[in-house]
Image (cartoon, rainbow over the protein chains, first blue to last red):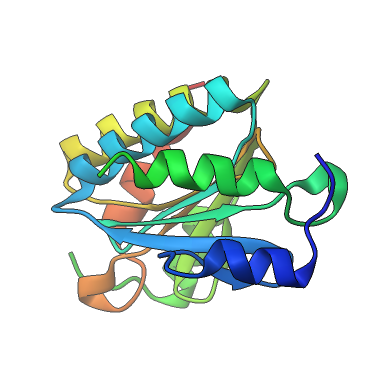
Length: 92
Length: 92
C-alpha cells in the first residue's frame, strides 16, 4: 500500500470518529471499566493480527482506550490504516 | 495507602527495573511479537484487577509494552504501586 495524499486522508476522515495526528490517525473510547477496556483491547488485537497491521494501544485512566494507526513501513497513512479503522469501528 | 516520600521512593527503586517519571513509575518490556505483547497485557490486567489498581498500558511498535503506575487518588506514588510492580515483575 502506498501513502495517501493529504486530500485522500481528508476524504477518508470525513464523517469519521478518527482524527489525524501527524502521520497517524487516532481515536479514543471510554469503556465501562478496566475489565471492559481489556476486553476491547483483545477484540482490537484480534482484528489487528488478522490484518497483520498493529495499532499503538493505550489503556489509561482505568477505562479509556486510545488507538493510533499508521503505516510505519511507508512513513505515513495508507489504505491499510483506514481499512483497519473501519473494522475496529465495526466492533460497536 | 499514603504517598511515599522521595526517599522512600528511591529506596523502593534501588535494584529495580522500574524508573520514576514524575509522580509515576514506568517500565518497558520488549516481547517477541504483537501476540506476545497482548498475552502479557492480559496477564498484567489480571494482576491489576485482583489488586484493584490499574496501570496505564501502552502497546507500541508492535512488540513493546510500557506500563505506568501511580496512585491517582493520592496524587502520587504509594505502596500499592510498588506492590503491583513487584507482582508484575514476578510474571517473568
